[in-house]
Length: 76
Image (cartoon, rainbow, N blue to C red; front, side, top):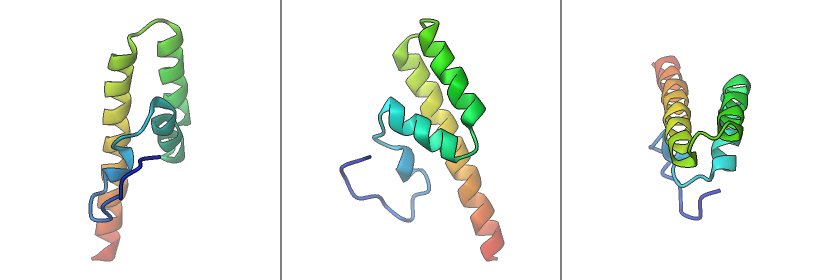
């Protein structure tokens, strides 16, 4: 996990500074088990790690934003 404090007002903070394994765990927790397997398969197939990390980061941030906006809607 990240070694810095996480801003509770920033819904994407959980994804920042994560390792590949950390992002995969977050993706799985965000109902993305199938997508996590696709990521693992891409790495095994030789897709460059940097590209996989970029796509994984984007997907985790997208899911965190969606979860956050859902929570905001319920609070109203």
